[in-house]
Image (cartoon, rainbow, N blue to C red; front, side, top):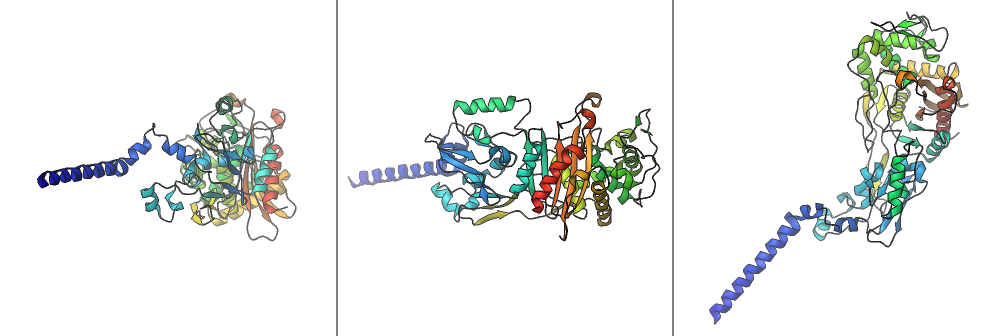
Length: 484
């Protein structure tokens, strides 16, 4: 009898061991596969089972959570949703997440292990951390000034702190309310179809995901390349620049909107945006040096701020005629507004291009810091001496040239206007550009660099200009940052 009891006990021990081995296999070795199985809704239910963490602007949350009482319990809410949509993006139970809602999802959903003091214990117990918070670099006054300035027009604004790369404003219009995509009802599906089918593309983030021909604002790059290469050594010496200028190897003649461009000095050509002077300068500098300068300003880079930015383009294989057009911001040269703000910031910052960033820090729910973003140099775009001369040229544009509408009493303002042609045979409505920087009188360094593009400027085609349509918007943003 004892022998049978021992055999039964041994069999029970083997069965218990088998159960433990199988439980270990399921819960440890195959846990990831089960978690990632689309049929497993446990993670999705848990994800929306607690309020989502907040995104902060100016120390205040611009997001929230609402208890829907449904299986996917908490839905995302937004304060001033259209104003901050290019920053926050949306978080939808149906359509996923974009921008900060996506790139910082680990913090905002509570799934980031850094939110827990004992992450291994949480892994073992399958416990969920309280959601954290994301603190942005956005200046609320600058964001509002940019949004009001654009109004009902299609366009975008990007503003950067030159010394650090902190993004102070990121606006795209028309915009949309990301709260319309929260939840699981039919209204969400209808909103998605309506927003994606709209002709004016309200969900397109024009500040970072749309590239435009930069037109004459690109002449900042060409002028810097010419000065660094020694093609121009004196801002006030006449250049050898015919008007009109025949593009090399073609019969096409390039002309100017302004008078006095023939053999104009770099200062005059920059103030009055002489196409002929800068097209020839680009050819004289050469493809190698022009490409190197454009790349050092950030062209052809793939940036993350922390979400991805569309690369701005400067072709590296051009003939001389194409190089001439590229040097005045036409042909295949294209840039995001953020890239053009980086160019202006480089001039204001002594030639150094700082990596732009949007997240100051992430924290736990109790405001303990999880991670911080520091300033770092992306490239040295030009010599500091060249940057000083470029600051002088950009200041002259505002005090003497086409950028007078950006002048701010009590501050030094530098700028560059641009009107970019596009479309078949350049028949599309021109884009109005303005890039600038501002330094308050008595301040140690410039506080802000701005880029504005307006797609549908409110004027007759022949009257559209960066100075008339985009400069007043840049001025409002700069005043907001300076506190004027």
